[in-house]
Length: 363
Ligand SMILES: *Cc1c(COP(=O)(O)O)cnc(C)c1O
View (cartoon, protein in one colour):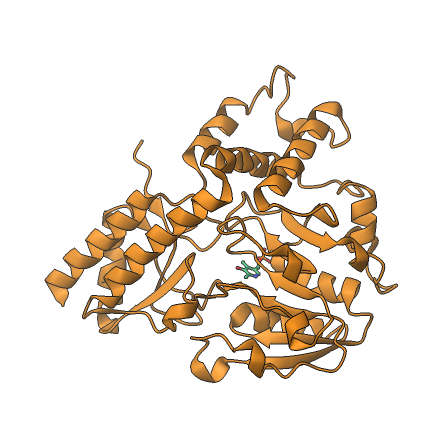
């Protein structure tokens, strides 16, 4: 079998070793005689799977002990409602709008609280981040939300802002769906982080929430019990049936990440991959990335062909070479290469080589 290189933004490429292990264990997990998807979430076997997954992820991401790590459902979009239901107290929350996802978060939160835009970079076409010193924070926001990697627009924070240094005591909420586990997180700056698993952690259906202990007691009475962080935490993510198979596969990904050398090693590889691809784009006369260099995403690389009439030919030629899912998001057009942890350097090399050949033919 010749696996193609999959540049999908999510659900996305998985480590081949993980898929092979899951296949080998599909009918009989460790002599249990059962597939993991047939197990009771309250049984001893699945209990071990979930406990190890949590411990491995906590170790990988270096999550301090005063944060809870929750396995939930509903994805990033559900968190856009679940976060204000849990943290806003119905008051004002601030949003730093730097792309499609933070914009969506602000819109959804406005159903539950006052959503104040502290910054908005839309006039740049979402090609930059706003300097924290320029943010118009409200007096006492319940929290400040930002998307630390904008999957559609390809902008990424290289460092998280220090709210305290800006004179703001509020907790920082980050949507790290599309770059979690690709780089370390500075937890001293974070109150809550959430992300869907389907970009960098595993299959769709699992949502990761990492929340500081002191933020567990603020939920609005209308918050559904299954989405109340304290309830989920008090029940070790088993208040209701968790997405057991997705947790199992994510757990295999965490063990794979540890075998790769952990997050620091992944970050080094991700830097190499991103530099290779951006270098090819910047040195070409055909391809173009509009994002300011210092805030370019290492995970999601949108690019355009200067002659858009060549788009279909570019995508068709890519498919022939086994380079899949390169079409840009419909809201921005062009191309997008998502180069998550599980996308090997060989995939980026193959893409760059194809881009050069295509340019030589059509440029
Ligand atoms: C994919 C994504 C989401 C949405 O996730 P769903 O699981 O589809 O709800 C939210 N935020 C970011 C940054 C994303 O990349």
